[in-house]
Length: 271
Image (cartoon, rainbow, N blue to C red; front, top):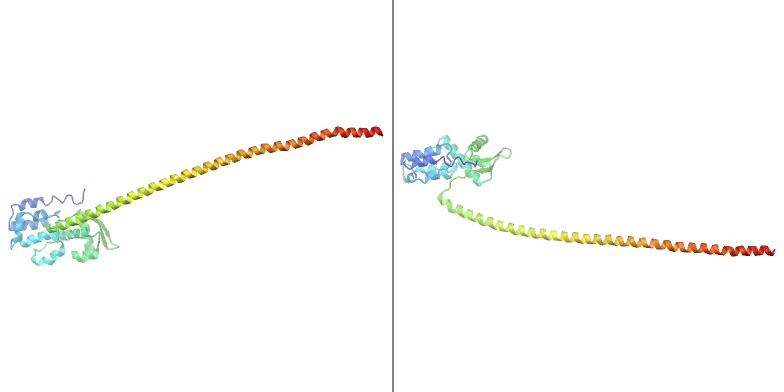
C-alpha cells in the first residue's frame, strides 16, 4: 500500500459539513478538523466559500489563519503568530509538529536532531525520537533513526498542500527539472552510442587480430610440414650414397684376390 494512501479521504466529512456551516459553526469546524485523527490535508477545506469568508471576519479570521498554518506552514510559523491565534491543545500541537516534520523531510534527505529540536521546540532527544516514531506509525513518513550520528535519515514522506501562489514557482521548478533531465538523457544517449561504436571497433580489431594470428599459425604449420618432408628425402639419399662405395670396395677386393693367388703359385713353381 502506498504511504499515506488511507489519509486522502479523511477530510471529506468536514468538507461536506462546511458547505452548510457559517460563522462560529465554520470556525468550530476548523478546530474539529485540525484535531481529527488521521487528517493531514486541509487545502480542500480551506477553499470552501463558507470557510474563506472567515478570512474577512474580524471575529473568526484567526481560525482561518490557523487553518492556513495547518495546511502548508510549520510550527515555527505558529509560534511567530501565536498571540493572534487560538491556543492549541496538546493533540493539535503534536499534529502540527508532525506536519512540520513532513515539510522539513521534503526539503532535506538527512535531518540532524539539533535542527529538529530547535524548529520543533523539543527539549530532549528522547522526546524528539518519540515524535518521529509516532509519525512513522501513523504512516506519514518513513526513515531511520541514527542515534550514533544523532540524525533522522528520510526514506519517504507524504506530500503537503502548497499555497496557490507557490504553484507557479513549482511549475517553473518542474519545467527546469524536465529540461535538465532531457539534456541529461540526451547526453547519456550520445555516450551510449559512442561506447557502442568503440566496443564494435574493438571487436573488429580483436577479430582481425585473431584471424591474422590464425593465418600465421597455419603458415608456420605448413612450413614445418615441408621441412619435415624435405628432411626425410635427404636421409634416404644419403643411405644409397654410403652403400655404393662400400659395395664397390668389396667387389674390387674380391677381384684382386685371384690375381694375388696366381702370383703366389707361380713363385712356388719356379722354386
